[in-house]
Length: 141
Image (cartoon, rainbow, N blue to C red):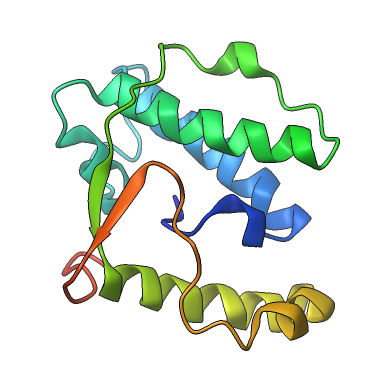
């Protein structure tokens, strides 16, 4: 499961579909509707907030908005809470780590996107996240 800190505009089609599905799974975990992935670190950073359903809803809403921009038909009714307008702190080191990870995926899956983005040192973050100084997260593999 990968719930990217990176803005969804950088994801290739396969990546955008995957993050939508994985975000919906995380939503089920946070609502107590599944036993799998309960302790996954990508879910834990959402669970840390007092209104985690609203936080994951905000995350999913931005993914849905990107899907609309691209002409996809993700089902917004699957977002089960009102999105929060809060932001979540995430570190610059985590964003950079994920960016390097995504660039390696794009090199294999979407070379034209890799070529377009490879000169960016640090991408824009997903709108939910407020980037602060710091290293990558200890839970990251």
